[in-house]
Image (cartoon, rainbow, N blue to C red; front, side, top):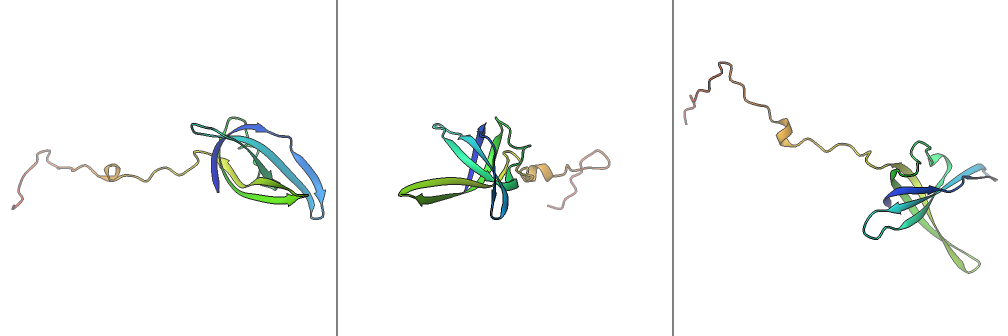
Length: 117
């Protein structure tokens, strides 16, 4: 899934040691666009949290997965980002035909109508 939203808050970085080594988790709060904006907490694990992109106020394109799990009869849902990049980093629009049409050049400066039809 993908989400386009503005970064409104960065929560403290969480780190720890697990059976597979050290881990890092950065939670961010983003706000969606539209008539009824929503705030969403997104978890970014490992080295996917690029400090140059994560500045409060930046518009972000976030690719994420949603996962729910049960613990002691209660359900918990995580929004886990697997790619975070600045919005507007898309490639430019392809050239239209108007942009690629070359002007007609007549060497003598005068237009002759010597066509047979």
